[in-house]
Every structure is written in structure tokens, then in C-alpha cells.
Image (cartoon, rainbow, N blue to C red):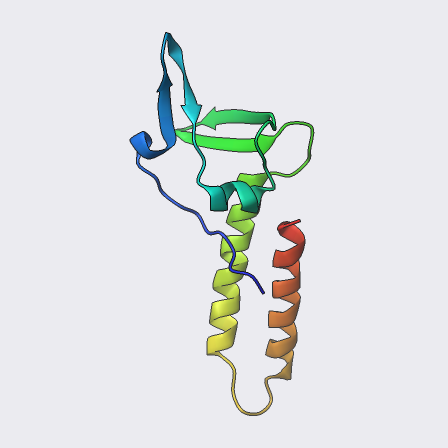
Length: 111
């Protein structure tokens, strides 16, 4: 399974770039791993919503809620880590099954 993108924090100056001659707008420079995880590419139109200091980004014309999926994936990954810590040599087949299902769910969210 490929490594999944978790919530990341960036410095303002590392992501936002002033547009010369346009003081009201900025360019947003997403790191390549973020673009790949979101399924975005150059030329895509991205919808931005802001609420309580949080920016949410979504590819226009799609139902993929990238920020919501990141939260879900992060929670599922935490549950997988906890489940793995509970594994024993015997009588934990149900935990193996749960881990497998959670990993499958993460793969679905990444599509």
C-alpha cells in the first residue's frame, strides 16, 4: 500500500505567493505530493471555501472533498495503528479482518 498523505502544516510564505500588480489575490503553490494525493493537475479549477480560519479546497465539478477525506483517512490510520497494537498470537482474527477493511476504506477515499 502506498504511503497516505496526512494533514500537513505549511508556512504562509511557502504556499502563498503574491501576484505582481494584483494586491487583492495570491497564487497558491501546492507541493507535488499534495497535488498527487488530491488528483489535481495544472489547469484544474479548484474551489476554495474559508471558515473559522480553515481553508478547504475541492476540484471544481467533482464531489471529492479533499479536506474531508484527509480527516477521515487520518482517523482511520489512527484506528489501524491502535488495532495493530492489540494483535496477539491467537484469537485476534477479527482484528486482522477489521484492519484489512479499514485499509480498503482508505483506498476508496483516495480515489
